Length: 474
Image 1 (spheres, rainbow, N blue to C red):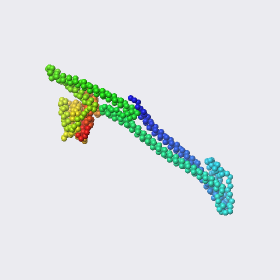
Image 2: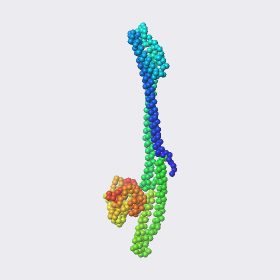
Image 3: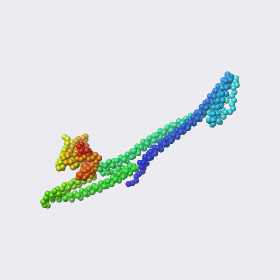
Image 4: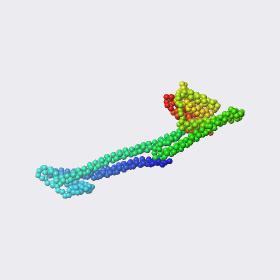
């Protein structure tokens, strides 16, 4: 058997689950990294931009208070204003010092704020001049306001970057989720479809093999273990077909080779029994009768073997016509009556009026009924009963044959229609080759019908088979 394995089932599952895990971990790692980056950026905004903006705002408030107190002193000469100016400037210096400690990069930019300064408090002529802002304080205010504007611009840029990073992380998260779903669902469905397709082929082959028909090759649809199983099944089917062909050839050869000497034996027994070669006593006639019965039985066995062989080679030809169903059942009962009478079996019939009409090959269906009735007589005990009934169902006619034998266990019922199969409970006690029911099933199947086996209400077996109505094609 060639080695066709390309990717095992375990490898397929590993690739599928591995891809899912890789995508999930990659997206998760990116999102975690983005969250950490956003956290650091938020921390920087709070510790730098927000703290700096708050400090500048407080220093500007002090400078505004200084300007107001300078105007108040120049206009009103209020000595308390000088005190407030000193306090505001002192507080301004403390805030400036702490701010530069936390943000040393502003030491150069704010160097002017740390140098010595001069503020003029003497009033000057003219109200407008006294209301004008102090030049030093105004310069400091301009520096701080520019720093505040720069800080706000930096803050807006940082917030914009965070927003864009959040949007990008959201998109990547959604794409990752969609990809995980695609790999999870799509890969799972594809893997399930691939496995189920191969399993369906193998199940089909096994079901056909279980029906007793000639096994056919199944398609090899994958290169994994199921593909190897399909190849092994095909190799087995090939061997079975070859053995079946050899057996069919052997049966044909055996039937041909035995039929001629068997015919000679039967003719010789008939001639001896008829007294052509001299008088025959009772003892001799008894043994000649036994020999004649055995030759008839052997001839019947050869006929059944040939029938099965013809059916398997698809050479069974049906002469389909409209047939009276009640007449079929009555004729079969008449032909089986001698065998039933010899064993003390009571024959019964339940035939509807008017008689249904079915579409079938009369000779072959007659053989089906005879095989079923013959089995019923064979397996029913002395004094038992065998019955045949005909009933109508939508688009078909149903024939039923019921016996009073030991019945067939439920687990064995599907096998009784296989060639050469005999129920274990009767193999040793009842004669037969296990071909009758195989012939019955093939004939019914050829008509487009179906045969089933169930247990009788009081024991025994019930065989039911269907035939199509005349307007339906088999």
